[in-house]
Length: 356
Image (cartoon, rainbow, N blue to C red):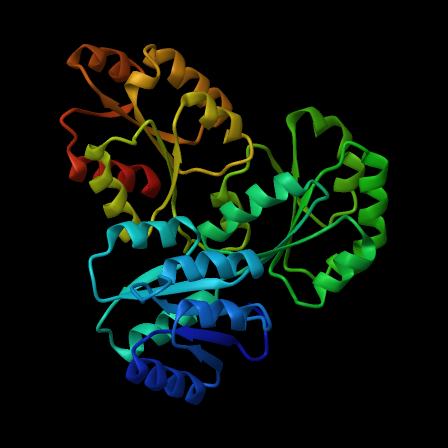
C-alpha cells in the first residue's frame, strides 16, 4: 500500500468509540472518515475510495459483515478490519471468508489497532499482469488472502507503465500463448521493469521450450505452474504470510468448530463440496494444506496420487471414518485422523505441515 496518506473508514454505532478511534488515527497521520451504521458506510464508500475499513460487526439494521461485503463490491481492494465484543462466530466467519484481514475483540488497546494497521500497510505490493480476467480474479484473491496488497494490469505497455508509478514490490506476469507478443512486451518494458525489485513470469510446463528468448533479457525469474504462494514470498525475501487451507466435504456440524478455530488463528479457508470441484480449481489456486473427509473419495490411494501429481508440495490430512483405511494412508505417508474428529489434532497437523 503505497499511498502517501492512508485513508480509513471507521464504522461503529457506539459514538464514543468511533470518535476516539478517529481522533487517535488522525493524530497518527491517517485520513479518517466515520459512519454510525452500515448503510451510511456504504453510501460514503460509493462516493469516496478508502484503503482500510474498520468496522464493528454487530450493528442495528446492517451488520458490519454485510457492510464490508457491499463495500468490497464497490472497492475490491479495500482491506477490512472487523471488531466485536461478542462471540458472533457466523458473522466473523462470513467476514473472514469475504476477505477481511482480521477481527479484533473489544475492548482492545489502542496499540493493537495501530499495530494491525501497520501490519496491513507494510504488506508487499504485487501487480499481476494478465489479460485473463477469470484467472486474475482467482489469482488476486489468493494472493490477497495470503498477505499481499495486489492490483492487476492488462498486457499493455501504457497500463503497466501506469502501475509501475505505484512502485510495486513484485510484478507477476502470466505468459501468453503468443510468445512473440510476450517477448515484444518484455523488450518494450525492459528499462521500466528493470527498476522493480522482483519480476516473476508464471508459465505452464508446455511453455518451457519457448521462454529462452525472454530469459535472455535477464529481467525476470520464472516459476512453473502450479505456483505456490510460498514461491512468491521467497522471491520477496519475506516469510510473513497467511496460510491457505482447502477443506473438502467438511460441511457437517462436527467441522464447524474446526473451521471457526482455524479462522480465529488466521488461516484462510476455502471450502469445496466435492473432490471434482477442488481439482477443477487446483491449477489456479494456491494451498498449503488440504483437509479431506474421505467418504468423498473411497479410493484414498488414487485420490492422493492425483493430488500429489497435480500439486506435489500440498500437504494433505485425511479424516478417516474407519480404521481399515489406516494402512492405505500409512503406505502413502499421509497425515490422518480418525473420527470422531479430534479438532486439536487436525490443527496441530496443519501447523506441522505448514511449518515444514
